[in-house]
Image (spheres, rainbow, N blue to C red):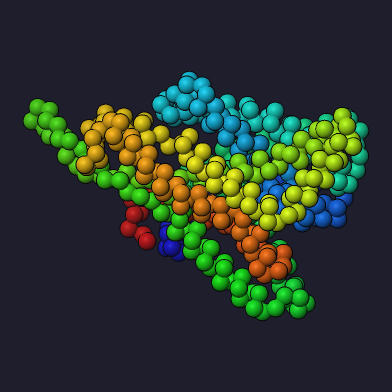
Length: 426
């Protein structure tokens, strides 16, 4: 591994790419430290510590939400816009053709539409969130003009992060959006270690708690790596075709079906659903403060009930895993592509029989993947109950993102080195 990174810095163009990515990440952390005016830091800390959903959003914003910085929403609006666009491919056939059948040019156009949609989403999310923070005493009451200025600044901050993410993606040593989220999560690690050490020094947390936490952390890390890389290999054979004096096909390959086909998208879906009632209560408060306050109190009471919150969270993640897998994996389309290229699954007739077979396989392995994601989502609740402290919390979602991004980045670096004939370095 050390030789691999040493080789990476010996090649001039790869070294330049790494330095560009490092500069972009440094710019991101700088923007995350610039707060908007009128923030009550103590009230903000209390709100984030008492609300797991906002804590989750703080992770995705790279800690920018904890500072109420100009990039407090992080890449949330862009991720939401991308999800909405993918859902629209199920409704509008032209979008489906654009995304799945028109190659790189179609994907680029599809991503451009996603960026257009990000702007109004960021504007609406920022306005609603600032109103929520004002009602909780985190922000000082501002006039309409100052509120609009803050909304425009935060919206611009989100679009700047989208631009920085695209710069990183263009370097081809990692996905820009994923790396920015990765950097935000890792940046909070020193503070977590400091808090854990402070509790240990003060004697408020027994040694056995740390031992339990360490064992759980190792099990979770191993499980995340195992499930993230796990796949079911479907054997595929290709019929021989004779054209002139040459024979084509006849080779055997396989079709990899990942156990965790949906990634962390179902968790984001579930969080959006759980946050929706709170934003609705804020909108109602603008017209009827009494009704809005009653609804907000009910939502807060629900979120503070660990059992109900964890159960509904698990069910939502489980259901959305199947839902998103059904969107991104089309057995009929894969079956048609195999048939066009002369491929077939041994023992299965091409066409509808192959599509039915693939559908049954993906349904069975998604059952395990959905259960895994659900457990990962509610893991912080479980560790808090088991260790009886909030200082030690295994962020399963954050860990899943960190592992996935690290593995994918290493694979892309390997690919870049292989292209330059450095595949001998291990």
